[in-house]
Length: 139
Image (cartoon, rainbow, N blue to C red):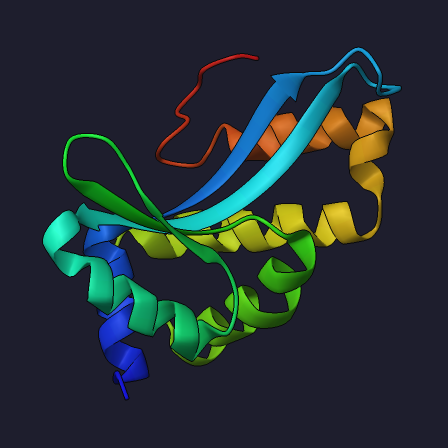
């Protein structure tokens, strides 16, 4: 069994908390909000990511191009019921902690279905700007 604090430490270096926004004219607000948590590593770490998937009890492991492998969770139910509680219990200590807090806030808004209203979508966009991987980039 992998130590759960090891997973938290690994996420500090190799993980991400993402909130992607893509155009979707079929939706009322015209955009889709997709949350994802993941860890990207070299293909040599395939077995490690499979073990992490087993410990967290959700997600998928994908072999990517350029000898990379990725563990990723996209299902909002798994993010809310497994990923967020895991990192609430095994608290991040570095720079990813801020992204996690923002990620958790957006997940809460999505659980309340705020992302399907223009006001809620705008709130998510504003909050998302403070995440490290998105900076101040506009949609």
